[in-house]
Length: 412
Image (tube, rainbow, N blue to C red; front, side, top):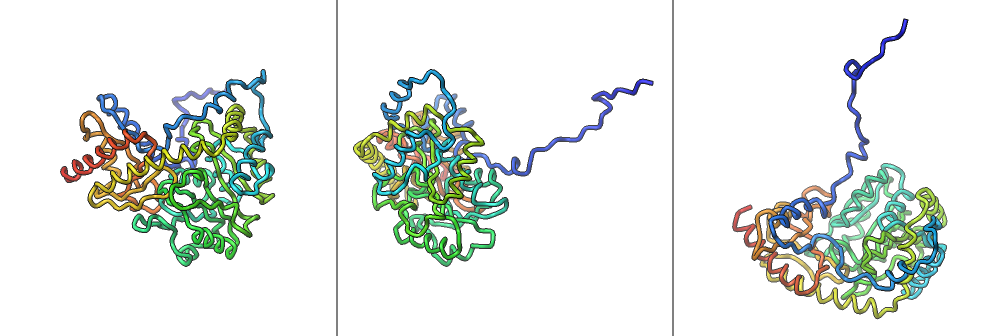
């Protein structure tokens, strides 16, 4: 007797579900307002984008020329560590910055994002903890979820220029599951440059508690006041310092997706290489372009930094024209984290895109809460990326002031 054949109608179905990790992935607070921005543009509103760190400075022509003149007939896989010529150029660049970093201390990654994920994955077991200082680069949240680890936030305050908390406050949250401390210097989103004393404090803590120290240094060149000190210049950390870097901001090449991880710890290096082998290689043509960009002398950076300093000054002056704003002029990167006289940054950011316009224009900002891990923080704060020319920024700051007034007058 032939067996009965089941049909879709009589087979009992159960719902499939994605993983807890998949469910925990956060939306980008920087990008989630894009639908509202697109709707505003469809209504004919001009938007000044202050919400995302996409520079308008042109990518160096040397980058494009090197890509255009790439002569190989086959675009083949590259070395998992990175292309040999590019590794040499990176090493030479770091030596120019006074850092003794050789090619075999470097793993080229697919953007700085992959460098961070590599580091988190290598030093932490699932469920382990990394200390971070909030507000912090919002994508650290997503990277931590991918790595299966927990970020333990320590609060910094606008009134203090977002400088680090005390040594005792940091040590208080260290547990048996703490594996390291992650910081960004110059900082995204605050623009703060940490002092030598602050970095020395972190050095003492990681040595005392046998932790790794991870430094996101993608904004190294963007220093207007003070001085940047690299993690790789701190003494006694050869087995625990991991530097995370990228060409995205340095050469205004965000879409190239070329970053790198730097370490003198051979176990970390080897594990990074194996992760690199698992994804085969980072982009070849972009490494060719980046290698050419690293041939630029320091006059390129000086010109760029002068332009960003002017932009920062315009934005800071504009913020100071808004009564009740709390903001200390930042020393680096190209962001300002400001506490505005508003009650809800998320609602305010939406209001600017849905209800406010002046002379057919408005601004788009990044709401503060997305840069925190602690619920309820950043409610009155926003991050402003000064990546537009000074004339546009002057107009944008007038619009922001008018937007604050309009928002508060409506009793939002």
